[in-house]
Image (tube, rainbow, N blue to C red; front, side, top):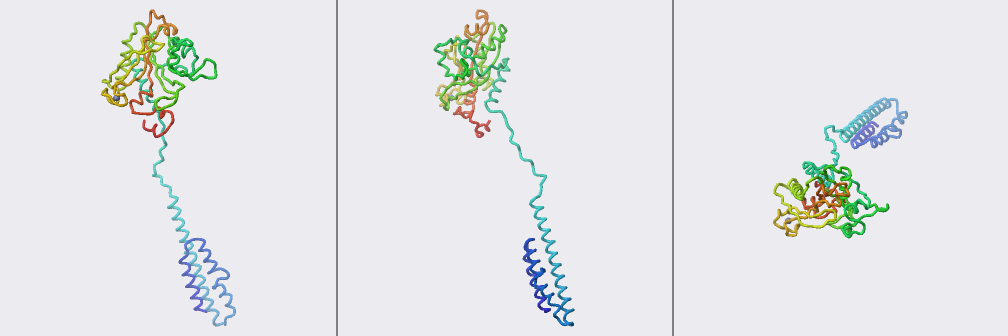
Length: 341
Ligand SMILES: [Zn+2]
């Protein structure tokens, strides 16, 4: 029986070595110290032993029981410690880790481009004037020297609204009437930036919405020379002192005489390339001296006052500057495009 006890002790301690977690430790406890464990069954048989054998076997059995209990609590403690270590490792809070960087928004490229152009005009003494994006037919056309059925109205494909005679402005020119009526007969030096809308087939070169800046100067002795100087100065301030400009005769109903103006090609600097169709020039916008009828509609006496006006498409300037070959990029909100500016 003593050798049986040795056997029980050895195999129990051996089995304990392979216990790696709380669940199998509890299994071990039931198997080796539980009510039907071999050791416990052996205790039950002590009563059947002789008087001489009983104390010897009993003492040894108690020794084995204490040894197994001690081994059990030692194993239990070491499992608890290693579980604690593991959780300390895996749930460690590293306070030195830098915080995650929040994405910072910025201005849309058309807005920042618009602002840089506005800044140039501000340096030349022009004030920003805001005018509505929805206008009556009167402001969009009639007061700009285009009475109903005037053939020049065909130059603008217009979005009409559900309100009779109200349409989205196809150009920033109706603002000229608003600013003149507000300030007449004072001299004016103003720019009118903002969105314009045209009913166009959308393509790489045409969008139904785009930004324009309208330039307007009205006063005594304003001449075509002032217009040319302003446009040329704008080109130089935007693109450098060597930037050349040219003016070509054109027709607009609200200016007389009218011109279109070109900047020297930004890509080839006048040598000729595919973008400028080998001419060395890029068309930027239209301009001219304010038509006497328009001056009169704005409240100025055309016998006494003159003025010039010009329009420029700001997206067009950005496209030329950054070689952007598709105007649709501006409004699709593709981060790959927007993040480049
Ligand atoms: Zn070119």
